[in-house]
Image 1 (cartoon, rainbow, N blue to C red):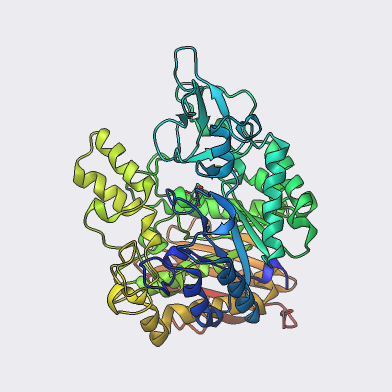
Image 2: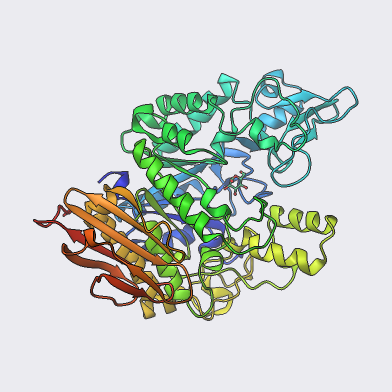
Length: 558
Ligand code: GLC
């Protein structure tokens, strides 16, 4: 089994299960829920950071890469977690946040105390002659990307919050320190690494202002030097252990670069996350807006990436949800009447594409955005900053709230809904973030009803069973259809036709003659459909995948 056969599950540890009833999820809580995870038959778990951190950005502000935040557990807990998961053949992927450290990290603290060595670990520059920050770059969380460096006339760069100081990747000592961190965790049995915003590490020595109308991110994102860094990192750390799976989080990347990041001949990463398909509900590319998603654009992006990456022998991470995105059902499906069907349809799209599927906790039971009523209920620094930015722009409180409500990252960070008991069965204590719709949506109910959870189990099974799913090629299909995202997977004498109706209405699909007359088998359907026909009326949010075989039956994994 290699990475192509695997399915990865993502756990946001603060919100998975609270074993000690302090309102925050923890590692022992995850250990308790291993039987649930094993039931889904996933192969690896990506854990969001649980390292020592002031939690200004929920653990993405790391103060010690080698120690566990005591609120979430101990090193012994972690070791037990790795060992117990291994008994179920589940591997561990850790989140390496290497673009920046917390300003509470000892490297930054030593830099503040005057150490030249550690000052060169960060990106510290003189102010402009008039005292302004060195460049006009803006932070991704709002405001300037520079903060005064102690009592000096200098500034340090922070592309994210001011408590997250960017590391100086041009310094080989910094890179070497980071590779040692990977090696440390590999020795503890970690088999996968996710590299946080890794393609913003390639900053130039001389930093320049963005021109009027130019976004500052293009001055430092996806630069050629990132390939050199990744090749070196691969050589010095995870590349030494065959079978390690790596995924880079790539902000504003291109297909061309993503092929270079992931084509095995380049020895960089196994796969990448890109986000183009999750911006089709941004008005003019702006996140803090509210608009319906552009379906034809979504199709085009998914198709371009599938075709392009296949052609260059690159590899995609496939996903709708993660801890930074509102729930996909709210964006591309129907959280009301058709919640189950649309959850199944969205899952079908991702799981049968070419690449490695990721399931974000709660997705497998169809969790949706929380129904918050007031801005106080949101916790995330990005959401609260955005709310104030929108008010400053002149929006009314209710307009600003409405946008935050649909776009906040907290939407996916609410506690896992285990049951209809108080606090969603996540904890006996009031959780750090409030769960809301758990009376209707929870694990207990989902397992009893069997609809979404079982459907995910089945999709995972298909990847393990059919080489056409795990290893097959990709062909575009019905690109002009206004309601259906369809595609064809190919392998030897087989074709897998996948049809997904993205809307709340019936729609007709005419199957071209070249696909008729072959032996056909419906592999999965969320509508109990048993046969494949020339003319099909797909019902609201219907998804179906049909395997066509020309001649002898095709090869399977087992
Ligand atoms: C990534 C993480 C996000 C975090 C940011 C800064 O985008 O997924 O949660 O805020 O990097 O580390």
